[in-house]
Image (cartoon, rainbow, N blue to C red):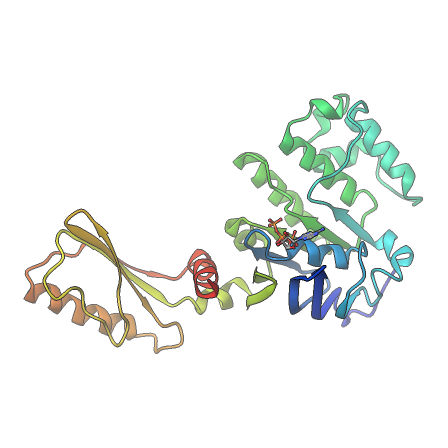
Length: 316
Ligand SMILES: Nc1ncnc2c1ncn2[C@@H]1O[C@H](COP(=O)(O)OP(=O)(O)OP(=O)(O)O)[C@@H](O)[C@H]1O
């Protein structure tokens, strides 16, 4: 199925979902453009899987509006199915089938011409040597790769991946990032959920950070990280009487460690670029006055992890 190129692949507008009295998704909006990779990052229970299930057509949107390739994913799921690949958080396999049999059975379920042979798909996900292995003998990470193979089998336009690398060792995770990156490079639109910040940082064109049913930060990795501000970080061998000063109205975060302390200042991301310089100058003169050495002094850019932790911390 083809849709006009200017139409987003995925649209979510003011989506709300509840389980009984509990509102798991509380009015979220985002758009995934065609051919891009969008990462939905979040804490446990943030509402990522619930959102994915609505987009996959497994449950209707209770409030708000969702579209996948311009169609309602629940009411028009039959029309959408050939264009969409889905990798669930937990795939259900038949343990007695071999890997190759599983791919063939799955392929037979979705009538489609021009599908690549099982061997080619298994090679894509690095499971070609396991073709004759029974599914129940696969490791957790290998099962996730088989899940991915089944999701891409029909050559979908849009791919939904719910925590695709959970349970994988670091090498398998990197291999899977390559597979996902290649699919995206070939024009597949990918929406994935993940707990791994590095996964989003490596792969995502755009990302959203979800916490308790709400999107708290949204944009390219650079846009989201720019909001984090610079960090000035150091250790003090002892805490002077009077404590550690504020710098340019920014109070320090002080964590006691023995007689000394670890100190962090977050310099507001919206402030002029030379603020870290000004702050550092007054910090060094404060240290001289108190005859203190700032140990392991570091001035660094904020990271995605800083943003993630502040989203979670602010919301608590
Ligand atoms: N079937 C259900 N019945 C009741 N509550 C549910 C159900 N499914 C999910 N929830 C609750 O809704 C909230 C969101 O769950 P969801 O699985 O969407 O979060 P998530 O972001 O995918 O979490 P995780 O990263 O832990 O997988 C959680 O508090 C969860 O306990």
